[in-house]
Length: 129
Image (cartoon, rainbow, N blue to C red):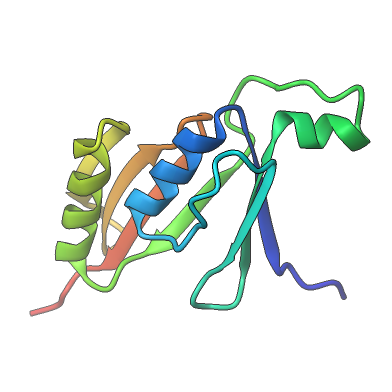
């Protein structure tokens, strides 16, 4: 069975996307003039950003869709880290969709949106007493 080992996002503005994901905490190269960047996440998954131009170089019929086709979930180290990460990214001017809250399913949770509308979920297990 094939294994998922990479996540790719088509960026409409490479510089803004790099800045978003670096602010989130990913070690994405600061190379906004390149059409493709990738980074390895601590869990070994490869994270990729491609410009629209790069995608059109091998799919000339490609066009940006509207809607929320993909979401990414990032586990934080603890509930306070959810709050800090959300505040850092939203404070940098990015879209904070829903401020951190204690979800009924037992996690501290928050929602952001990257420059291309990709929903970013932040979560950590709630500490039990």
